[in-house]
Image (cartoon, rainbow, N blue to C red; front, side, top):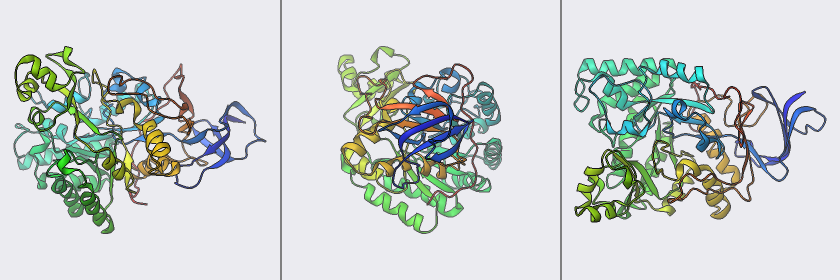
Length: 480
């Protein structure tokens, strides 16, 4: 007797292979059978005629660290088929907490809940209340600096470097899948190569990885990519280039060089992967130094001026009778969307065989980037069905099996007997994002059923315990 039987669907198993019409059986939290299950009884049957049955999507770049506490329904995840998220990106994470007096603007990306003392405490909290979806966590490099350094914007002393490495070792022992850097942000921007290499060597001892919001995604993008690749080359630490892009029109097309450099590193045996979100606008904290460089900047939140959320910086500056840099300073701390990317280049980067999908969604924003709610259906609807830049099978693999392999998530990202029953059923003919720049929290269309560890979480969430788990890394290679 199966608990659940999904019948008559087209199964895309995550491997990249061709779809096949068959059934999927689930017993408890695992997939127990895939094939012709017409002779097997089930307590519940889901008819997927004409629909795609695939592994649940893995969002490799989330900032939902504190949302598991503040807004645990995670509807912006489940409604687009996401069953696992990797948090702790861009150098900021839910733990460890800074020593008193230390802070950084980028921590505002996470939420309002006080940071946790250490990753073990963070994981224990998530496990005690059970997350709605699965979560794997990176430990942020900014957190390590803020938790150990008397002057987090300086060069670490030998003792402070050792303290950072010890904290990282403890976090990885507790179950973090790696560490992340935000080299474009304070205080991560203060780090030099030796500091990063020291941390990477700790990660290597745990077979963990390093993900990086690189130091510069505009005029110095090639050097910034090479910096992360050098850390990987000299330490043999697996690397992920986060939300890879080339910003500002004068740099559009330079991904040809950055991707070629990644390919050379991969040919040398280095584990290198990358991710994108399928939009031509980026979003992060408001950085006044960017105000005059980028023409179109939209405010997503502002602590001193919440009434400006959703407005363009140029309009605010004109109303206030000042330049955009001064307006940005008055608005800060704040968040913003920067329209400085080329959609065609984003699509080309996505086609790279090492490229995954990460929403980079910021649920703490009052007027968020639409990627928070629409990333994965947008890939399926606009990149696959409309633009046809990859096949549906290839896109599903980029959103399931590839990230499971990169982050070492055993028995995830695949539909086969014995795998965890993370499943999404969707309509390939209608799936599409509906979140827009003006209405960024609209749910997508075409996602029918989402299951996490054998329990349905969308469109109806479970009434009892939430089914997600805290995931730990197992040793796997990032390249197929």
